[in-house]
Amino acid sequence: MTDSTCGSEEGGVASRRAVVGGVASGAAAGVGVVAWWAARQLGTPRAAVGFELSEDELDRAVAFLDAHPAIDTHAHPGRSFVRGAEHLTWKLRLYASRGSFENRAIADLQRGHVAAACFSAVSDFPTLDARGGTLTPVRDFDPGEAWAYYRTQLANLRALVASGDVAWVRAPDDVAAARAAGQVGAILGVEGADFLQDDLGRVEQCFADGVRVLTLVHYFRGGVIGDVMTAPPVHGGLTPFGRDVVQEMNRVGLVVDVSHSSERTAYDALEVSTKPLLITHTDVAEGGLDNPRFVSEGLARSVAGAGGAVGAWPAGIRLGTLEDFVERIVALVDLLGEDHVCIGTDMDANHKPVFETYAKMPLVVGGLLRRGMSEEALTKVVGGNFLRVFADVLTP
Image (cartoon, rainbow, N blue to C red; front, side):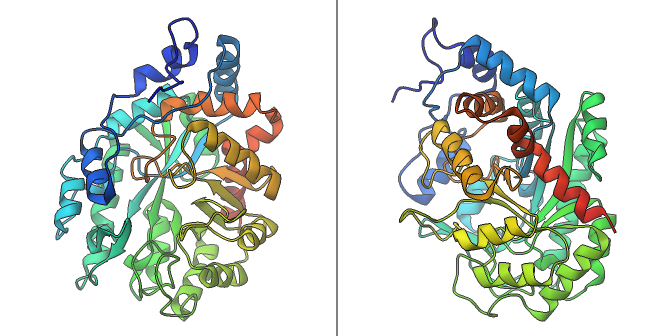
């Protein structure tokens, strides 16, 4: 397969200057879940781009990123969440055996001129297995396990901040401060709120711990919060406790992310919340293209109508190249408006990603500028919309 990113020596300017240094040559994706996950142990497969940028276009993209903060609203840079995970199935042990690689991810963030990313813990990782082409829960949490694993992952992320490799982002202004100090901003997040168990006081504790984005559910079915989008419903939407959690998140200043939520759960969260919500990483089902991880156009428009934003997600479900991802961002802006689209890469834990390294962020920006997106709109999409929601949620 020809990767047009790399191009020829004469035409591959974007590759030489922004990509090659940050992309390790990886194994090709295998057939089936196990082969795919095994291939990831050898390196993330390099995705085709589908276009080339001239030197002037690339220079403009880099200058734009240096002037306007790019923020990944949902990611797992370096896979910190695998450290300390216990009682895994053999497939997830294989996945976790590679360990974490935060330093490489941070170097890629810097190489790609990305200002900040949401470093997300994964609350239900130990309960999952790879089956039938997706992740699925195969057991309940052991007593106290979810909270203990949250504390373990929090310690991992705190250690990363303490190392000085990233700067902790607790408020929007911290992004600019991190850039001024030459550091990558780390917004702490958790994917799946079942670690709260039935203790509402843990929401405030979560905020005090420095977490700023909380995805209500992940893959775990039948938990304390509500229904997931990838399994039949158990609760019929948010549980009464889940409703209390959303209200408490509004009170303390935690951003509510309804990615992975069933349609009913997400609509319930919209009904309860007095603050804008995010769907940090998804796609919109339209034109006959659907997937359990996609949301309806109606839900996307409802989130936008409530002041929130929907994150463009570069998973290899309907996308085959980085150019496809650029086109999806444009389509989402056309659908929802420039004030309601952000980017959530799911980096280092995504499914067959077409945006597999932050080093390619100048290509994304350059591709969007080439497609005619104004710099004002692009400023909002790459980071401004997230910062607006972040500020709104923190405001009493």
